[in-house]
Length: 499
Image 1 (cartoon, rainbow, N blue to C red):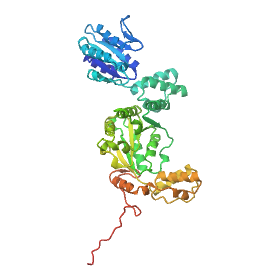
Image 2 (image 1 turned 30 degrees about the horizontal axis):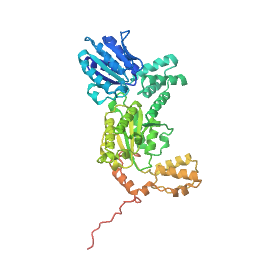
Image 3 (image 1 turned 135 degrees about the vertical axis):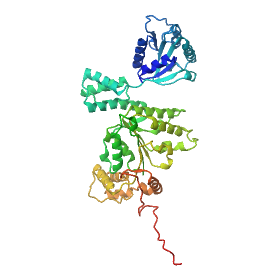
Image 4 (image 1 turned 135 degrees about the horizontal axis):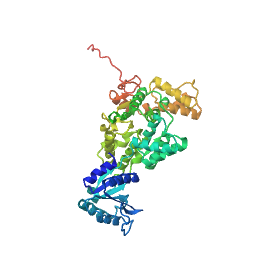
């Protein structure tokens, strides 16, 4: 619903306190002014710089044009008949720390029912004092839609350059979703200056600056796609196919994401970063440590703000690494962190259920026992995928990849790698190049995690068996103990005893 339509309903219902959350004050004022002109309502505006201005009144007696208290009291003289009188107070949240201003505004909002005087606060944030919470209704000023962004692009291109073809134009509009009208106009203009055509790369560059200002998310750029990953064929096909069928026409069909469970070093983080390059989507890294705040409620506010930014960056991939460590406190009594982890989990679960943006969530986990059970139920993710130790064919591809990367001799003998992960193969190749020694000798310095933490690795593989999808083969993962695995039992024949 447009801001003007929502605003007209509230004025006709005589809501005398309206708080509009908007970063585009000029556009919001333009819609309100056009509506007031059409309905013949009185309109007054105030800000700290220009003071009070009343449309249709050439001179208005102001004791102090910049005094917020005088602006509130001056509205008494406007509400003289049945015509609605509206005053828009821009960035007025800055003055609500004054007891006099809060008391005067409270009285005027209550009295506004009798003389149809509507007080509108236009601000980029919602910071309502406790005394005024029940007197205001909060309204969002929606960001421009794809149709409005297309109009902005056509207007800018008409003056300075050209529009791209249909496929590139869709990519530009996807990239521009979440920008304000001014930001979109600036991004389109920057692209035209650079290449005489609007390109989505310039739009993403401007969006990246939004992340830097927030400090809550990081934009990861990489040149590595799926060719840099050995194995994980089933996981690659599953995610790529679901993202190509993103369901723009039907939000109910949009993919949700995957939870990657596996042994440390099997490529969970590398896959999340390569997926963005493979599908042409930016990868946003959510650092849970950066969300922690020192003040009460600040952490939860940071979580909500980070998720709002991710929604504005659609279509994108949101990556949360080792999510069980961030939310492990939610399973306790709350005595260790005052319930912060539980509230973070609640905010994340609400967003996973309710968001309609084209954000694909990838979360990784190394210890399923510390994972809150409500996070892994059906419809939270499209699937829970287990990444096991790579098989022989996958290991050979990983060896060839890192031997070429570190410019080593491919003909030399390789060490025994039965329980190695991809990260340990890379470490062996890097040490061989660093120390200028054969690969087999460098392998003596590598102890695989399947040996150092064999109990936890076996426990993780046994838990995933029959419960998770396999990352390397289609279908459910099934763990089969091999003869060399710790914990395998020797079968004892149970022939009848002679006694």
